[in-house]
Image (cartoon, rainbow, N blue to C red):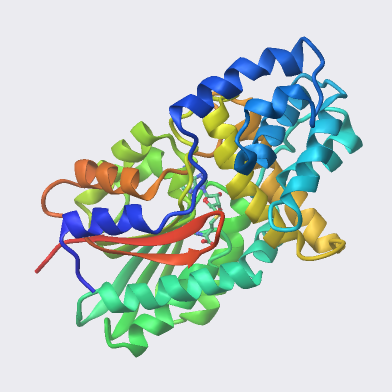
Amino acid sequence: MLFTRPALLRGAREDTHVLHLGPQDVVTWNGLLPEVLDRGSFPGGAVEEEVQEKHLGAFRFFAGSTLAIRADPRATRWFEAGADVDGDDLRASEYLSDVFERTGHLEAPANAFADPRAYTHFTAVPAMRAARAQFVSFAVDTLPPESGALRVLDVGCGDGGIVSELLPALLEAGRWDEVASITLLDPSPEMISTAKARLAAEWPGARVEGRLARLEHVASGLSGPFDLAIGSLSLHHMPAEMKGRALAALASSIDHLLLLELDADHDSPEVGSPRLAASIHHSYGWLLAQVLGPGDPDEVARESADQFVAPELVSLLTQPRGTRTEYHMRRDRWLTLLAEAMGPEIRPLGTQTALATPYVDLFALHMGRLG
Ligand SMILES: C[S@@+](CC[C@H](N)C(=O)[O-])C[C@H]1O[C@@H](n2cnc3c(N)ncnc32)[C@H](O)[C@@H]1O
């Protein structure tokens, strides 16, 4: 399905579920913080009278995480009260309460993507399988018919699962006749070797190359051209200005770019701000509910939360812009940034919600050259 840009932007605003605090909420939450930090207010007390009822779980997460960053034991009470309000659907307060109990502070383990198994568990949960299947069918629907041999670049390929799902669908739908080359780019050696082994086994006739690098360091020097570049849950690891520079550098060597991203507001809000806490509470709360699964988590689920989700979550809660590792953006911000960065020849060709939940959405987005 092709969209004109205004329609695309309209659609982008209509179907999002991210929790967005209004300016008055931000003033209220900031004003209540001294009550929590300095005057020892507790959940359920007068301090919460000014908080909108629908925001209670998010406010408790804000209070709990602000205390936890200071290694203040009162964090537990706020997290537990937050978990009572959130129930099983949003598990950020419950999870951080557990982390805080275990460690007494909030500290990110070294590297979120060192062990592909922790990430692979996440990609296999039902919600992510559904989102990825939708991403593949969106790609098939919006890519124009081409002929010849496909040269594909996967930016932040991870374990290679998404490109592995996408390629057979593209060939089956006649988008390309065969696969000539697969370039896998990722700064994690473990991810690159897992992805490379997988794709080389699946596509013995194709040239499979692994590049151990960050996109922002190599975007202008990749040995393209590429018919298609994909970035599935990877470009959000750069702040907006770096995303823009890297995509501008990449633009001349690609015809199409397909993104799968989470609609959340983690780029511009600063560390410790109510807006960032509110967005994290919904997005990571939902993510943790998927990773941990219903009931008591098994060992794999627990490891996935600790090794893949926690480092990103703790980075967002403790590190300033420029230092932290995660910068999810709202879909309309992506559209503006992509249009500015990629120049007039690469245009938005479509967007679709890949997964809608009451708390957060995943969306697919296609930028490409026409003709
Ligand atoms: C959430 S995983 C997504 C993996 C895969 N694309 C998928 O959808 O299953 C994010 C991946 O992006 C990689 N990554 C992080 N920062 C990056 C950067 N600056 N440039 C390229 N890849 C990056 C990580 O190492 C990780 O493998």
